[in-house]
Image (cartoon, rainbow, N blue to C red; front, side):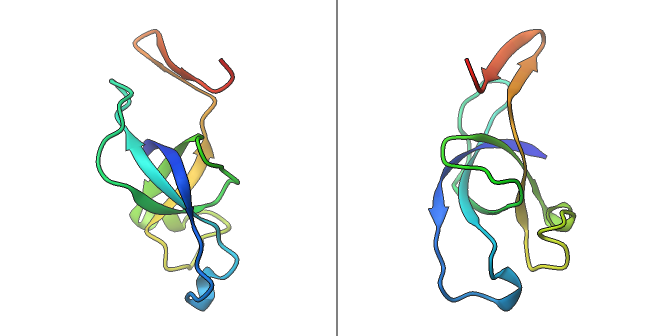
Length: 98
């Protein structure tokens, strides 16, 4: 699992039948210790109703197919949580409603 920030959306009018109705979001991973963005942009299936600018938890591989929405679907990255706060070594790194 890792944290990321939702940067945008992907719209696809033609896609595999098993992906119909699924929302695609663009996510940029975050380094939890430094709170800096890292790596490239990724496309993930939204299983929790996330929106642009939100900090989310993402999972990849077979874990990404373990939600009700993504079960038995051709998915390799899913958003499984919207983060409210993050504390590391007793220090608040992020708070959604600060």
